[in-house]
Image (cartoon, rainbow, N blue to C red; front, side):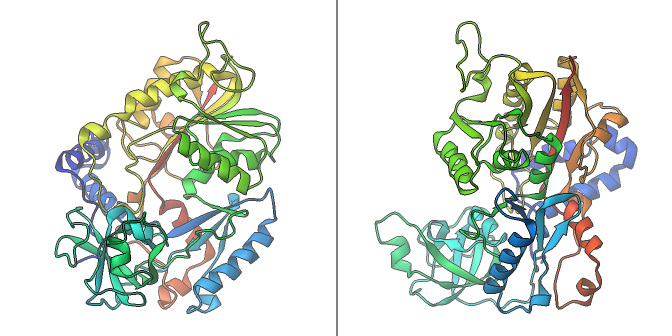
Length: 474
């Protein structure tokens, strides 16, 4: 059995996605066998973490060299069982504010202990990206588990484990070994709100540093395509820029940093507690040009009835030099994702909302301004089909080339021309073979690979993501 089975989806969702990735245009271009093989590879890759942890640097506060040294010291503390030569910190030649840390694993030969802790699938996903097990994520623990016990941790793929169970024989995936920081009664019988680390992971299947509360002023964890978005937007000091759906603030703070904290970045989100995260992240990174508002992006355009305020939403038409619409989406490109319980209705529900937000964005953009649309999903309906709709609906919009362009071109199936597809950027996990390279310092293959090999791998082995860049012609 493979370390990671393919992502678990509802049958109707898998059927829908299979039709998307075996659409007529793709079948005509590549044939049924190749398209089916690529779709199966995609399902397998989605359940696995990307091969690299991407760290965006706050160059507003310190130099790349300084932050790299601080990060190296922290990783040595955490991974003290490894020699310094056994881990690497790589600079990205196209992204000067990014460092890449290869994930070590999957480590297939770890021992498995009789004491098993079962965690929810989201908790298991987080462990595969370097997190410890926080107490709220624990679903089942051995009857006599006490602090200090060595346990094996498994992810409940189907969500069938009963909270408080003492054992579980259902569908589960091993994510590593750790040491209990709480006893069973503290987790299930205390009556108090659960918080803190329940299991400290010591031998995870995929070894990656834990960045919880680490160098919080200097680094921000982001997936590589999410960093690319900020550079594609191309913010310039002194501009007024809108991030329409901004929480938790990673892209917002990146935009502000790229502007050298000079100008105005308006961040909006309609959920109040998410907005607080934007403010917290801006404060941590000491960025002053960000103004955050709790507001529904679909209502951000001022009308004669609502009027416009001096600073906050709703805004007058043609108020912004650049707009980022990182749209709410089905999130099917996120990795690792060992199980998605969403119905087909839920998966299909985002396209109308995205179009409403996009329409507002076009009206808020100044002539000559730049609009970047992005999602972290893999469907045609939320990506290339939205581009085709936008170009037909808004004659004032023109697709633009993207720089940097690290992903592949857009996917066929939305009746876009070849030239238009080349101007889009789709990060497709299926581009890396299911048996693709993983870093293991003990293997000869890893030691023989060059830094260029690692960078090429990092550009491909990412979450699923989509970027389109438009300019509004006068």
